[in-house]
Image (cartoon, rainbow, N blue to C red; front, side, top):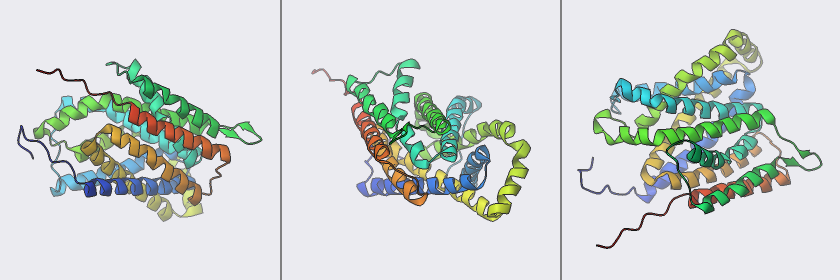
Length: 326
């Protein structure tokens, strides 16, 4: 730990490149195994919840073994984290459900619209965060690109409405999580006595997110879960279902921890830019693995939307205030 008043040495390019590579690989494999699990069992809230349980076991193993310091949080700290955990839960579950009812590539295209939601949340939820005008202009190609991707040749507008709504829920929740969470997590990280580095922040949020998934599973799937699992096991084998859920949960935890670590080193703007580039890889890989059709409009529209998201990330950072000369 650096002493007060001393500058922290910047992370090496090798470390940053390694984190990005692991983040991208983990996210890609997560989407593959997540879709495989969802294709096997029609209990999508359960799958999303079970993936978080895998992460909880990893965190507990790290803390109990002493590999990482155990978070030292007060009741007020935990209560402050609750809204962030709720929106993290909805962001995760919205993405899982979008991939369950539609193509992974389509879910990722719609999720490229997240800056639109983030811009709206920034203005509507206090404290107001107004971006430079150019950043708002960049929202136009994002919306236009997603719209073009939804136009099928010879069919006109063809939208998978449930997938679109679930992906939009994920976008809104992720934007609210970012808005409400930045000040809370910054405060927790700044107090060394709380042991809340980037990895522990994610571990705690993962636990709270799981807690919020329980009511959704109970009210939507629990009454028929045993029957649904038995039917899926008869067709695919219980071990294969469990394998895909566990592996997807491992990759989910793994890639998020890498993403949190990278963001803590370089800041949110650089992380947002690379998060945009990540979507290209997922769209291409999922289209190949799951044989998802990519028509010309889908390719062009998604490219426009992703470029718009990339541009928004670069232009949304406010210029540093000029210091007056003494």
